[in-house]
Length: 428
Ligand code: PLP
Figure (spheres, rainbow, N blue to C red):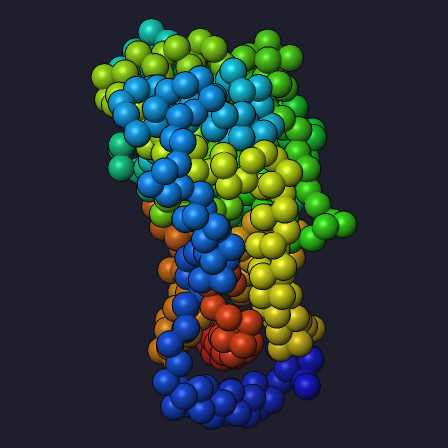
């Protein structure tokens, strides 16, 4: 295997390499592949881990929750007590500071932005009445976060991500000085797509922010709080509600979580954890919006998982399925691209993604090339605000859905596309 850096090759060497790679690519095209590494979806084997939940209830089941409420009926606005305890244990917060919603935390995030936009937060001017609202977007990040705030017409400001979290000098500069900056998107643990986790220092600097806007909020999406890949190597982060309270800013954070990638993404349970004042503010509008969410699903989750230990046991089973997939992609990238100096990639200890950085100006072409041979990747640029990666370099790899065997092929083809596009770029 040739592992000479491409940049140090002569033009002749590159031209003959390109010919070889082109031939190899044609071979892949003829295979008629149909593989998908684009979205962070659990595989069928992972979904099957929660099928026991289907047996929790039958027609004779006692469907009362612990306070005696019949879960089949109307009522209980923000969640049954035992579901609050379960979700609070996942979110590492006090059960008194959590509210349960429907099946999707993304939906809760959208609604949270919408409430601030239409009604304002804690009596402040609704964001829709302001000339300008700015939102900070650590990038690469989660495309659907960025899309929410883009849809409301906010100005999205890119904040570079480092291995220990967003660039906090820049965050402080914006938040502490510009009253138009109303929020920031954060995926603090096993971030999407890099799999980075925020250091204690970064979390403390978040809690210590002194925003120019009194209604500035941190949107802390702890989507991957228990989603470790390894038993012995794990990221743990400081609890943000507690840190904000200690720093004297108890209302500054909305923390989101869900069981989407613990049970079923289509039928999980989502929650928001926040201060008493913020919860009272949310309830004011929620009571108009609904009489209560799906309590049978909440009860089903509690009866199936019981508690945090049940969740952790389930996450170990998920990890046993996911780990070989991450390792397959990482090993293939190392075998195929190691030493060529045409790309770098992350090696996360949890979460759902691997982030790949190609040579500048190559990402779009690589994704297009992979598609030509039947492998779908997340659209290049999606990990940046407005779907525009200024360097056209970042590609999100989602290894969860295909089988290990399929990934072996897909990752090899992806690496081939990286090589081919990089050679063409260097030859330009
Ligand atoms: N937040 C992050 C960071 C995600 O990566 C995802 C899904 O990929 C979600 C939220 C979606 O969460 P939910 O299924 O609870 O809406």
